Length: 278
Image (cartoon, rainbow, N blue to C red):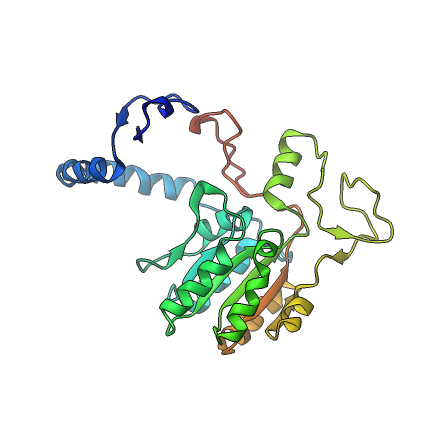
């Protein structure tokens, strides 16, 4: 089903079965009347069955993985926090592994791909809800789009927490390069070292230099910077950060080549999604 005010946009990218041309506000109001009368029990039961049969999972080992970090954020807060996201793999993991139980506690730019959205959104959410813990789940690429807004957070005394899932890559693009371009990594690596080639096709020994050092960046702005490199340190570091009444950057050095699934290849349908079950 495709709702669009512009008739020429219907089926432009994906062929649709039911085209609806009209103003979204009016169409959704009419759609709500239909949905309220619909019997959804069978469909909800089918979804519940799929969730049991195909649960979201990841490899549970000693490696620091992004899914574990998000699960720990959930376990500490029990959902009593406002979560914002930037754009990338972390955005998907934040949707999948944080259990949202309260309305208006997940703020994201959705499929618009607005890198840099999460941090300003967290600042706005903190201003609107000064009583709430506000956490921006970010990637090391996307957070740099509006990182200068640390000035705003510090000057206004906003205790926003930014959990950076730092894999040293522009992760979503790197994942596509791995799966569809035979690991021909081009301009996605954000780490440099003395042995790094000019064109990085894979992680090399001697490339441990993270760019930038987010702990130093936070401190330079007058905020608090923390770093997590081991799985066992995730929870105590998060608990410490959440208790601080100042802006905090938590730089989590996660597995470099962790992928987010399911995903749909370009031009494919949902029936052709890639699973990636652990």
